[in-house]
Image (cartoon, rainbow, N blue to C red; front, side, top):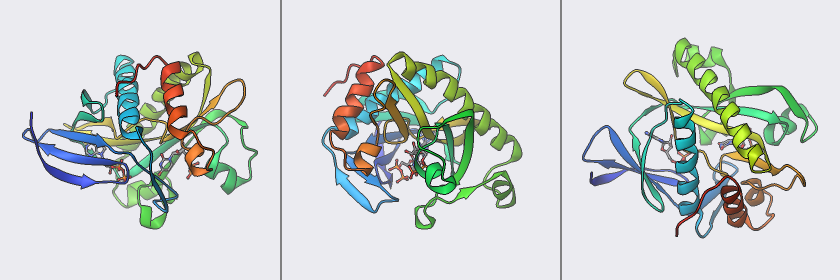
Length: 238
Ligand code: ADP
Ligand code: UDP
């Protein structure tokens, strides 16, 4: 397998084509962005930490029977993935109130949400990723009814697996974002799962261990990502 060209450079990852049209290489960069790209910084080791974190989580999800795009980790900061036809929506699950839910509905941060809340957002930075629902997705043809049902079911299945995995490491999985795509007619989990796209709090102290450390200038961003990884059993290579 050989990289053949750059397909797309996103805010945090670069996507490369390979000599196999069904496979892509994802390169995780140190670039870190928040507020739809308004705040941008380079954080040393972030690319390699998130690549190895994502590889660990994708393997755990695959073991739990959830289809993902992940094929293999190629290097400290690159992974081989299936080439998905990405669906332009973000699937968010919330177990505790935080972030935009608090701002939108005035709910107290940290409130337990039972049952967990599921939300769709349109993946569009220029429009600041607006919240959408099944009806928008159907009318604008972003995904079929069956695909919407599959994305919801898979996102909630991921919640069962990861809530337990992080709880075992003494952390609360507050919320997270997933992206899905189509591969041979199936809905498959794509993109990444890392502390860049979720909220994790220390179960005892409530300390924030995720990208909110970057958003809120709390410091020790990557050190916290590494601590989360170590607690769930990742041995990071550099
Ligand atoms: P963004 O596009 O939000 O700036 P990234 O920097 O993470 O995000 O870029 C990665 C891009 O690759 C995203 O647009 C994502 O939807 C896309 N992507 C992730 N996984 C796959 C995949 N398996 N196949 C095709 N595209 C993918
Ligand atoms: N999230 C993400 N990418 C986005 C928007 C949200 O990874 O473009 C994640 C975010 O890190 C959090 C969850 O999705 O874990 C819910 O985000 P929220 O709607 O609260 O938005 P925020 O306040 O984080 O912008």
